[in-house]
Length: 588
Image (cartoon, rainbow, N blue to C red; front, side, top):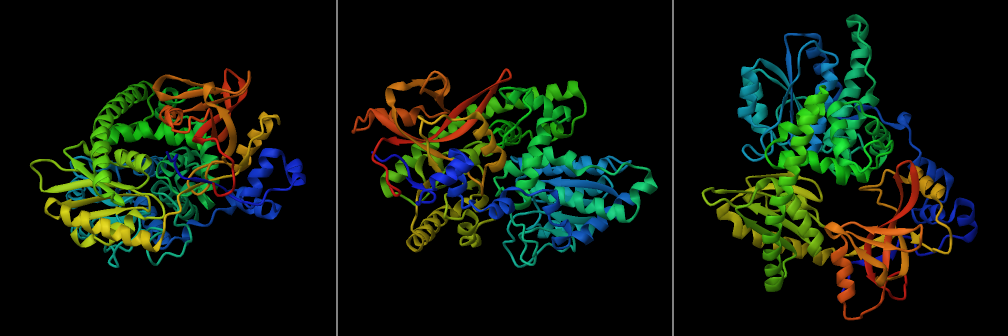
């Protein structure tokens, strides 16, 4: 039995013993594996500060967009609306812009987001008509709009100024008819920041707007305190981590600061949610992993179940009692989402196994009359289970249109693969590893054939190099010091896309030491004071136990964590990958 991808030492030549003695055994191996043994390299990559953040005016059209938004703030007759996508990135960006503008304007700022299940993704002309009837004269999009050609025409017809802020790839040479398009991934943009999320773009708009207002002496004239942008980084970090963009450059600097802001946030809604999501609600430290796996999935669940208004309301709510109610509702929807998701997942898994047995497609395409809100999560689980890209579509009996989600597996790009079949898609958009799409049911067969053929041709030209890179080795005879692990996280985090977790190999762990816990978690006690925890890893351990080799030991790739509980600290090893024990070499 094959246990997953190859494990490859990130840098085959070993760090010198002198270097590891100087830097510390763990930190030395990590610095060496990431090519950061030179202090100048280390400083440029790891030690960025706010002064290193590039000007928001580097983005194409940012100056004009910020000036126009400043005009609206100075004219009370011009009502403003924020139109966002319904996912966590869009919701966070909406909350950033809405609360920032409301801190400067006597008028309330209208928030609008399409219903995931009824309207779907994008800027809809009918929604602009509704906003126009409310007297809205300026609409700022967040995390959407780069393909909103019809909406831009409708805005012009209605006399609405449309300011588009987005970060999705420009898929057409034709752009919406508005001079106010800010997107680091539009073809003429030279900002060099393609990794900024939708919420990140909203934050940079606030940064630019504050500068323009400062130039106009707006704060002095209105007798207002100039806002501190750091106070909005708790919202920035939610959207940026949820959208799985690269944590490099400006993102790395702002997420690191944003995690500190989030840990001490005074937003009643966020505080109520954190109290329910985190194991220790009083913690003063929150990691990117906490946000990715414990916080944002709960907020996304409300949107997936058709109640995005609850998440949007929670992020901007100022009332403590109302925040408690909203947080309870969101947690209940998350439980419902989990139940529905599991039902659909089992059906999708069954169909995927059938496809693989019959013709082994390079991309899984499965469909059914399924809840549209959980298709992306199910697609991601298929990728995890079968190690290939997956498309999951909702096919309702009485509808002509199929909507769905795609999740990818590098080096294959979701959006580039969909580019190649754009002539039969009603709409699509997304990123390298995640995309949404819509097509007519009559085109489903042609869609599958072309997706499979194009992906096969891609892999012929770009053979898969399926591997996990790790940073070094653990020797339990050497003391794992809390101080060194804390320092590793201090200099290396935030971990995430573009800056993967520090992984270390521990060999020859007795299978007999593994205990099964509830919810398919496992624990392995290595000594009186040191243990391994594996979240949702029981099936992998069970496969090891049932493997033909009957090897009594296994190897593991682990992250090193500090467990904080009741003001006590201890080292905790988190299980990420397992395989039967074997003699190791750099390409095993």
